Image (cartoon, rainbow, N blue to C red; front, top):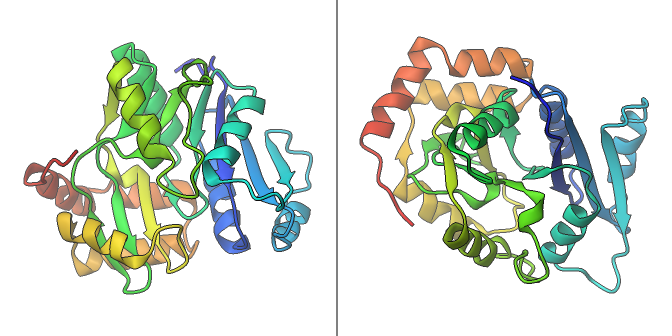
Length: 260
């Protein structure tokens, strides 16, 4: 496809250089070429410096943006600020916790253009409990964290709530009332990871695991290896899309539950 629209990927990071490095690698692997990554961190996040040094290779598509830790900014405020200074016609949430297949941006932009919709979400993703090393197919809904959205939608009246968490729900609810929504159903391209130090605690994830469907031991083992960086992004995605693993995903999608 013609990568004519710049997509700004917004990554708010906090004290986990391994996860941030993995998220940056996923960004670099994207088949959609017209992209930028804004990595936003607060001034007390000293661990990010080692990542900045490692990435100081004149890749102008990646920017590191420091914000003062005091006065404290909410997660919602950090996202709004990053969107405001981004250069893209579209923005995309790019959490440092998670893993993204190399086709994530491309398939979401294709869905936006096909459906003439300014917003796209994943309808399913893979939940992964990295503590127990168990994978789940999520139930079906528009997952807020997977948003790819036209930047012009964000205004003084329609933006992320100034909250430390749950900042995206009011925003997503509002734009879902106002605009057409495109939904991608390709869970192999998005792994949402619980690692024990997420913004949300285990009870939140446990509820989502319960509403989803547990994947096989073989599938969970593959996810474990993928997240450790054993395979390139392209190789990992091709394995998840192979007949053996894709068949399991398709069968579980057929019996999945839809929640709001």
